[in-house]
Image (cartoon, one colour):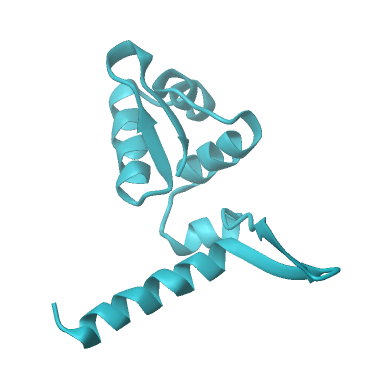
Length: 108
């Protein structure tokens, strides 16, 4: 990897980091606040459908979601739920935890 590529990758990572955090100084200390980047507008910009957006809002409130939760929340089949949750995982919006019947998802 050449230096130009390495610098470009680091700049991209820094920009992504800045999107997620706010930095403020308070009485000589630096305070870091994590931004809520998962607004409905931001999620629409990522080409998520309404069911996926609803699931992210659910995750923000509840902290985790299962395939069954997603099915009930959106009134859809298990297979559709599986596909749409995997899309959210692929886009790094959520993280899959566990295997088999114990699988659940958290915000990424």
